[in-house]
Image (cartoon, rainbow, N blue to C red; front, side, top):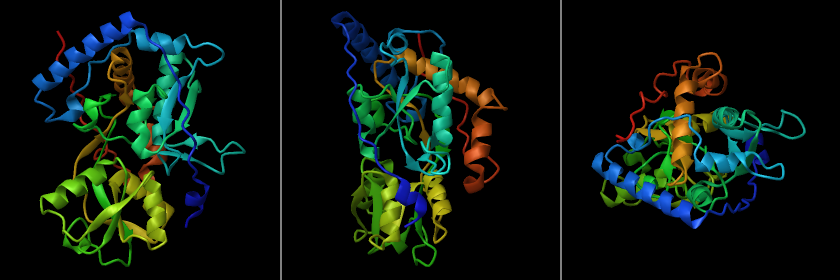
Length: 329
């Protein structure tokens, strides 16, 4: 087990109740219904990464409630990971507080700076992979910035920003393993995925379709994807399937493992928010536009700092395409 895996710990999720008036709920439900109709009109989720709203810097009800929090709680409440190396993790060398660092964390600070005028006006909540959507729906967090793939199932439950990163599912296994990639070499092998992840959904669907060996054991799931690396290190599983971007960071943590084969999907990370938080979605999309244009302190600078060592200096393969938005009338 690596030192980083040892220091990574799960922080309890604490619910935050944000009451809404009946009038506001009615208006928001109407908006959500309209957006659902727009989504279906846009191709019935054939391209989930395009099912988002156009950018705007205007404050709406959701943003005003964030700004009006009382008792010193004027902070953006964000669900993040705290044990994904270079994405969202606690660096034990950063001081007594072991502050959260990484590519996702940089984006959170940028969003807080734009909305609240202070990059540190953030309350981080570490949440496991399978609790990302529930945390948004029950109001525990304003948003989730946690290597969360935009897909058709999820956009039925939460709203996403435009994509901020491109990746794909990939296999991670020991260097000495006979596993060669996402192919027949997984036959008879135990494969670990995070519960509620797109990796597990893909494996389950492919096995039912006969595209993954029937005797590949995909039953082993964990709350957080880093737990799969620990299972791999302990010899409890033969391989891990997760996003290639995360797998590359795990390989950097443990030099005895490596990526096997090419990515076998194309996926996009997005910031997830409540379905009725239209103004927040639009604001985040505007922030992302500005963040990608900022060559000095934006997306590219964050990539260079955190990810170039594991994914390569050329960021083009990880940069999402120019965003496309739902038509609005």
